[in-house]
Length: 277
Image 1: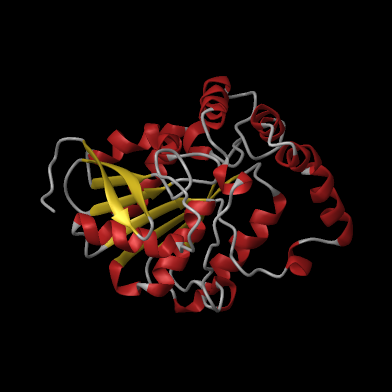
Image 2: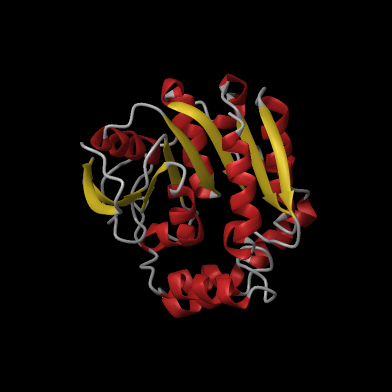
């Protein structure tokens, strides 16, 4: 597929569905992979800023935004592979936040020759044993934290699901960032929540990333919001310890979405990392 420096949008046929994507800029490919419950729009503060330097690709993961979730087995890493093939991308930088970071890690493990650099923001490590992440007391706290959301799922009450997520202490931007917080609420309010209400069977990487991180050989930046969930710091420790070319950065006074809370600082961090490759 020919590349254009002008913003482009389209859909790519992948197994059982079509992924909506947008591209902008020119140069080395850089793929932005959004977090769970959000969609490509969470990168609005990065998309055009990064397009001044790179050919930027952002897309809606299957089941989010404009990408539908049909009842067929799928793997997010395979969807990404099919999208890149459709766009003619042979090698790329990957930037993923949370769920997007999980996909980026799994893709890198399965297709190491296609990734030049990896940026992981607030990313959990798939396969991390629960007993190493939480004490029994912390696990009970996590269960309590999710009660309202689980109740809303059982009732298929989407507004209540949005309210529950917005009340989470670290998942969404803090009240210090009202514009970012409102953008997140709007995004959530437009989401179908198909991922939890009508899930399709996901095919996880086996063995999981937890056992394979030492295989990752590309330069990797591990970025964290300083006020993100405590368990994600254990994930970050594991990533930093096992990935040989890893570096780490923390963005002060941010929760789980530092790219939306402090976009200028976040963008400078990413561009500095990529600019030194």
